[in-house]
Amino acid sequence: MFGDIMGMMGKLKETQQKVEETKKRLDFVLIDEKSADGLLEVTLTANRKIKNITVSNDLLQDKEMLEDYLVNVLNKAIEKATNVHETELAAVAKEGMPNIPGMDMFK
Image (cartoon, rainbow, N blue to C red; front, side, top):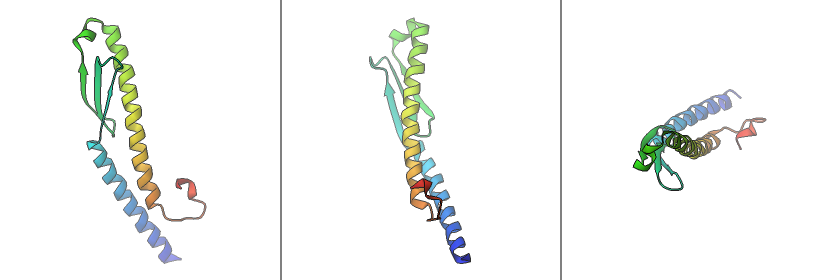
């Protein structure tokens, strides 16, 4: 029994390390999102850090419109990045979870 617990602890520690490595890797996975008309484009990492925002001069004439574009496009980009982030981390966590009775929520 004790050996099983030690084995599970080792596996959990290994999984935790893989999760940290995956988080670091997601800093280099870029998500691009742009408005339907292409006037605003944003790039962020899968860790949801903004890397770039490109604004067309056409949007600079209308502050309210620019603000609306920023809110909409950033929200879409963050949603995509969150999906990638969660999918990647869930895959690592599921792969590394020891088989503990009653703990099958990760499967």
